[in-house]
Length: 109
Length: 114
Image 1: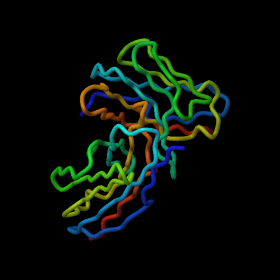
Image 2: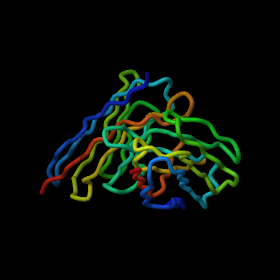
Image 3: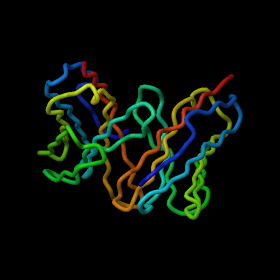
């Protein structure tokens, strides 16, 4: 079967760095996405990785290792507004997104 | 922001009644999707469309049907609502081209079946 695993909840301090991990087993691979979802709102796109390595976009970076079925999202200089759920999703061989259950990130002052 | 709207935004209905949710886009994107989101689960695909009158089932399609008669509208129908269909429903769109297959999401519909 297809499976995406990520921690249910994480807590971090304002101004710090946090890494959210995602491991996956899917039927084929056509890229990995990270989305941010604030409570009561729609998911919004953060990043896309299809090749191994690190993609940096401002305070957010995303890493992929296809051989290990592993990705992480790195958030630097955390702000209170970063409190949200972070969703990992893999595009399978049929170009459908398989979603993890999401990681709820709590930022404390 | 992608132009996607969903209606209604909130609905309470009784078990056994039919319910139709509407997704409307102004982006002329080819692909449209219906997901449900429940606590402890990732987004789960119900049905999707790859063009006018072209639809296919997703992971959790039982009890749901869809129609797409125009590029901009994608309707999700619960023929006879059950309490297990209480959920938040998201519509998403994608142009399915280029290096990205990014999906843009509508604001969601919170459906409660009593």
